Image (cartoon, rainbow, N blue to C red; front, side, top):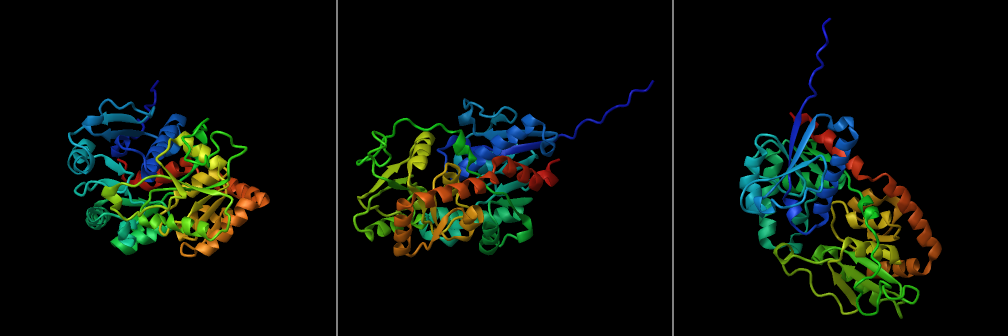
Length: 381
């Protein structure tokens, strides 16, 4: 009796640029980690989208002692150096002819078998927010990646059009995957906070704390935190504080961020646990940015039940729909009126929370990973 020989499953090798694992997480690093984590979960569940996938994340040799946070995506250290130099020279050798997936806005310029995620065209659209070397590098890198990569991925239809207009990458070469805020639901809430003066986070006594409005992001120019301060100055006897979380990198942002007014409490970087506590305790979250490719912080806020006021930007409307209140990034009076309205109206806050829950239910990292696999599968061989 002849026993039929079953065909071996097709092996699909994938190398992932792991440069992001060696630095403090920003929004694009968060996207990278959560996307790989979701790919790892798809492999764990035997999802058909990842059948035969052999994924390896490659990091510089200096990170050889790094614990692998993934179960089914192997981790390998290869190549001397770090940062941009490692990415341009050591990473292509480590990829070894496999499809290379770059998730954080850059990739090696001389490696053709790659798919690279470019999150936005901010260095071209708001160059004053960045240092000259950073803008010059993007002016060279982004169009080059657009030419050599098999596929370019971005995070919104808005950014897809922007990459085409700013860097002349053909629309047909650019795919879209969305982001999610659900990772914040896995984070425990901090029991105490290193709160600034006035205890706006209510760390010592939440019952007696003043309400506070929360803003999250780096202090570069296009994040537009000054709008929040200007709006607060228009409110006579404001009954809330303003808390700003995040920091800036002078190598990237230059000196464009400016100095925040003294009555704005700038906490700098906080842990994920502290950030969750701030989101959950805030009267509302305000996102006054002038330019975004997606707008992850408002989606994170919605996932945690925090009412949101955001600039009416095409990418933010695309991500958040009718779950937030929109304002002009150039009108302090309009923002002031919305801040007074939201902080004083509990029923409105409840309505916004309900809409936020409905909106974020459709934005999952699993959906991101599934769509990403659809985009890269033609070159996995």
